[in-house]
Image (tube, rainbow, N blue to C red):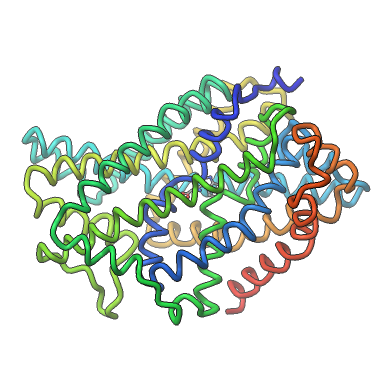
Length: 450
Ligand code: TRP
């Protein structure tokens, strides 16, 4: 049955796919700027701590449940439930998760479209097509809508090919390219004047800034978004892992790659900002903090690239290419969530499920674009700040309280016969039972009332 519904062919394939999902705009753009404005290396330490004490255990909960059921989240949560109430709650959680995944994709595709447009814009500038370059890099409804459609077509094209020929093949191709591109950019930027200043800001720890409760909560939220948790993405990828795989190890590798790339991206973005400062570009906002988010990506960095002359055009091309790849390997993991459900629970063919759902999500993206001021921020907040932690909470409750402990152990034993004697088995079940729900509840309460 497992192979009939698709399976990753190797450990490498799974790790590339899951790391591809995890490594996205959040890592390359969110993490470095947050670290920069929040105590540098001290933030990094807090982030590392949270990633391994909260995000990794929550990731394991999703992967184990998914692999056990070899099914989508709706089916999987029902299957591990003991009674009628928990079955119904499980099905509802799975359904809400797939709706949230679809909405996350609808805003993610907009941002990803900007990345592709800027990538092509740099190319146009390089060949001297200045008019086209201007259209591609200028914020307009026509450009935004066109590139949402382009990006969604790429996502749909990959997901239509299925688990092995689509997700695994493309993630295994794109992730190494991403790593090499990122590595080249880091090496190049570090040679420029001003880069060392940025490195200092990134690496000198300021513990007073990193230990504030608000900051810990932010770091927690980013770790959660960064590992694609709560909406069933990692559950469905877990469901495509074969039974012989050692889950705690592969989960650890995915977490490691995700964090590693975020940290590496810090060696690019921070030095780049101080190179920009050196070249006369403003990098601080009115409050004196480093400029971040969209202003950084679409204003500060392009100004930096312009100030670098011809080399700048190449660097710009590479940078936005990197962002586009990172976005694509993440977006496919979001689309797979509703698609897998539609195939498995409603007997649709993959092709028609992908076209239907991909079409609906594209329509939602266009609707958001038409009402950008009101809808964009709303969708981002509703999905990532509220829905994700709440759903993650329920996943941990299912893994920690509802699923029978002996069945859980049985599942882990399949790929790691010695699991009962390991540190993982001594710590994780309690952790996912008590610590994770409490921490997530804390974030959620803070988001709601803080
Ligand atoms: N983790 C990705 C990033 O850092 C985004 C992502 C992919 C995601 N799939 C997800 C976020 C599912 C939430 C839920 O950019």
